Image (cartoon, rainbow, N blue to C red; front, top):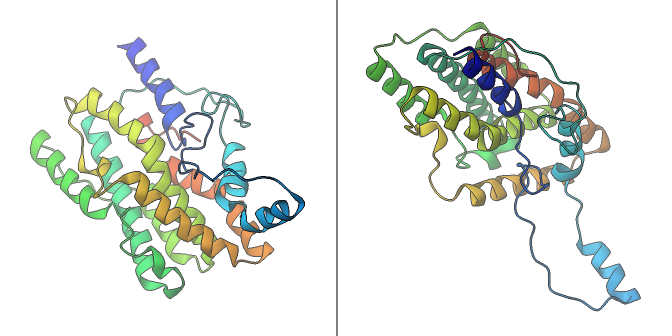
Length: 263
């Protein structure tokens, strides 16, 4: 059991809030579009330069995220030092508390999006998790005879910080990282929990209505369009918020590692 616990803790450290890198591409990145072949001349080169837009997400935000990944999480680009953690095997009660606090943060994000006209493009975007999480919480309570816990301190604190934010670039950094991390490393954590605790049942938290890659590409496109209109100061504000998003998400994931924050 000790060996299994150590193995699980190691796996969680790699996956928690880690954006899995697939084929050397950050998990937040959509599939690269295909461009037609062109004959490169002086004229076509200048036209091509005007047509190609540098991705804010794939350059500036991705760079900030890589500085917070360890080599274990991102072997080629991780820069953060690794942390030693005590082995821990989560229980169904731990997992339920993780789901409850996760829902509380998603409720805060969805409320902010619905209240602020400046980010109305992200209303009903397809990534919403509040309703699927409610179904999962009810399932866990019914299936395992658990009592629904109150939202914990980490979930309460993170949601409160989000609701106090006025800066759209700051909010969007949290929105992007919290939602997209769940579609990458979060799904891998879900598979691990499913095998460990739920007899391989996939919760609704890890299902989306429609093609997930298409949903992600659409949302990412809206973020890129918004960021293109930001000032340099606003872009920097968004990038500089990355560490806070990792701490917020990591605090929720700590339920699965005995209170040890993965980041």
